[in-house]
Length: 105
Image 1 (cartoon, one colour):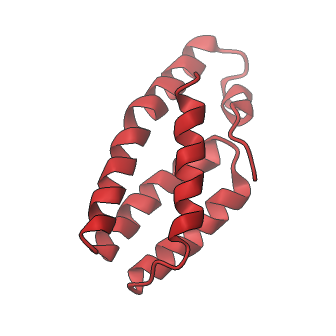
Image 2: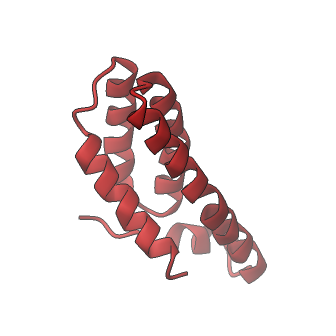
Image 3: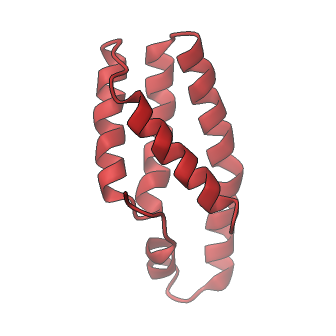
């Protein structure tokens, strides 16, 4: 399984630690809210709404250098739009991994 990293953020920042801190703070603030909304929608079987939240979460995956996870999230988003949740377990594993990671930042 891929591991989240800050390499992409560090590349973007070109050494600007203030920029890195802002992006990390943004992720630490937004990611848990987006995950909660995703789980709430999924629990209510509102798959279209869940897909919208997966779409928002996907971009965080990219920022954290998770290319394969991003691709899985993209596929999962499309499945949710068709009222299918076959990749739910794999996607949720990714969410828990990122949650654990950002809690260490």
